[in-house]
Length: 463
Image (cartoon, rainbow, N blue to C red; front, side, top):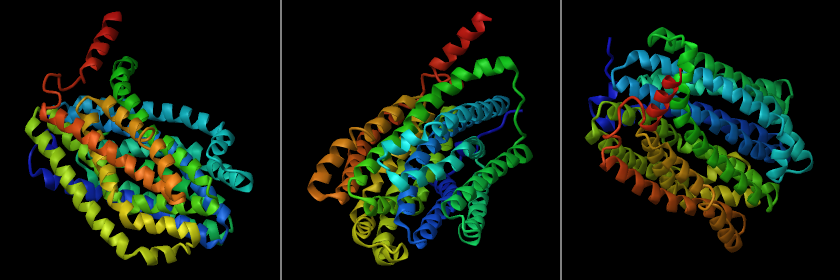
């Protein structure tokens, strides 16, 4: 029996708002807990602990980005199958995406875990701070397959338009983390180890809560045959590889920023770590928007509704501008209480105040990149997002950071990073507007993503 995609009818701005706000509640539940982690760690009065979390955060961002890339692939494939009315294919794509996600993330986690010393050293961490970072990471990194399972499960739920249950999975994880943090950090005096163990427990909770509604409310997943794995892998990897590469660009750029900031001492790294925790909480709606707009574009593209694809992209940018202006004003008005909350002084204080001022407004261009990448991934041009992200986090960071660091010192690192985002945000908008104006994939089959279909045909011919 054919199933009709939820987003091919109705008000697009309404769909965007509901999907983004519900998804952001779940995301911010996790981000707020990360922020609380930093507050608790700051309360311990040891700058090395806060700096260690800053270094570890860059590497965790690297591993999490892998999971985001796999989730993007799963969400895009399931959404397009649903948009085309092919429920059976949606179930098969969901199951093979989950299985491949667990396999690939396990391998990836093992590689990262075995090279933690080298990775931490590359970021510029030394001495006790480096040892603390390695301890923290050695506990969290092995749990990556559970995080990836939760991410893919959430993407499948959003592809069905079930943003509420996807939200509840991450909210549950956030609650688990929030409850365990004070118990383990202060009650059992485990400090950084306690924070890491709480994060691992949260990942288990997210995985379980994202899979449960898929089976209970959306017909579960189909058990794939061995031949189905061979059929689906070129389709999955054709989106997953560029999506993973796209996501990995961000932590690579962040690693460079972390190393540049390390030249100014642990105070500066602590300030950067605080900014890194505030950003996703403040702009959680935009981080959620990148995942929310994908199924909306994907379903309408799958149904051949090119005019709605174009309108969805435009409305997402309008939504982004409204959110950035509103949040930037709030950050500016609350800048002193935020500084006091983290007991920030010196260079740490300066960095936080700059972020809560003009730099927050420039986050609009990061939002443009998020929305544009979702359009690229769901319209069969995932390598566009790869090129934009790698450009943004290499030539869009390094020369600007070098220049503004020379001019303004530690705060120049954040300024350079933001200015590079402006350049690539404009470029991403230009490419995405051109793509959606051409009707996305009007010349492609709705269920094969172009070249992937030819790859599948070759596999069948060889049997």
